[in-house]
Amino acid sequence: MYPRTIQSTIKKHLFKGKVIAIYGARRVGKTILSRKLIADFGEQGRYVNCEIHQNKQALETTNTALLKDFLGDSKIVVLDEAQSIQDIGLILKVLVDTWPDIQIIATGSSAFDIAQKIGEPLLGRSRRFTLYPLSYTEITQATDALHAKAKLENMLRFGMYPEVFDKSESESKEELMDISMHTLYKDILQFNQLKRSDLLANLLQALALQVGNQVSYTELANLLGENHHTIKNYIELLEQCFVIFRLRSFSRNLRKELSKSFKVYFFDLGVRNSLINNYNALSVRNDTGAMWENFCIVERMKRNHNARYFPNIYFWRTYDQKEVDYIEEIDGQLHAFEFKWNPRAKVKPPKDFISTYKKSTFTVIDQESFRDFVKPL
Image (tube, rainbow, N blue to C red; front, side):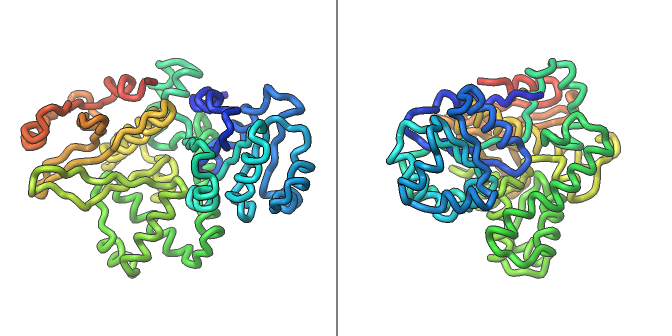
C-alpha cells in the first residue's frame, strides 16, 4: 500500500557491476521491496529465500559451475536473508566477479553479521542501503498531508512498522508484542549465541525508559548487575540489529562541553512503547517530549538516507545543562535543532552554542514545522 522511497534510488544503482546490499530489521518490508525490484524482469528475475535449507545448500559453494546451474538464465537475483549462507561474502565476490552482468541483490536483517561476512570480500564491489519502517513522508505521499497529520499521535504511540500502521489499537498491540518479544530477539540470540535473554530484555527496558537522555555504560551496568563491557557489547548488537541507534555528543571548543557521552533512540517508537507496555495517549504521558525528539530524529534519518545524504549527526550539552537536541554537520556548517511537541513553547538558542559556533543555524521543530524538516531533498 505504501510505496518505499528508496526503491527508485536503488533502481538507479542496478546493473553497474555491484552487489546491492539491503539491510534492515525483520518485518520492515525487505522481502516486498526486493520482489518489487525484480518484478519488471519476469522470468529473468529470481527470488531466493536463503533460510530455506535446499537454497542454503545450493549456494554454499564457490564452484562456479554449480552456482551458474543454480542461477540459470536469471538476469537479476535476490538473495533474501543472505546472512544465513556460510561464507556469503566470498560467494557474493565469486558471483559478481564471474558474472558482472547479473545483478545480485542481497538482503539481511542482521547488519553486524552480514556486514562482517561481506565487508572485506566485497570491498569496492557493493552498494549498501538500509530499509527502515515506514516514513512520515511515504505515508503522506500514499495518502495526503491531512491523513498523515491526523495519524501523528498514533505514529508516536504505535510506531511505523508496515504490519502495525493503520491497524486498530488492539491489532497494533498484538503485532508489536510479537515484534518486540520474538522477532527482534532472533538475530541477536541466534547469530551471536548470546545466552542471556533475561539481560537483553532488562537492558531494552532500561534503554526504553531513558530515550532522549544521556546514557552511561557504568550506570546501566550497576543497574543490571553486569559488567561495563557486557553492557557495551549488547548495546552495540542492538544498534547493529536496527533496534536502537546512538547519538554522540558534539564538542570542539568549550572546556565545559560533554565530549564522551551519548544518547540512545529507538528506530521505532511502537517497539519502544511495547517494551515498557505503555501505549497511553500523549496527553497523559510524562515522556511525550522525549518521544517527539526520538520521532523527529529518526524521521530525519530516513529522509537523509533515502536521499543518500549523510551529514555527521550529534547532540550538544554542557556540564551546566545547556543543550541542543540535534545537530547536523555538513561541509563544516552546523545546523542545530530543538524539538518541541507544543507549537506554543518558547525556545531560545543556548548563548554559549551560538557565540562559540557563530556560523551555525538554530531551528525549533514542532508539529507545524515538522513537515518541512522531513520533506524529501
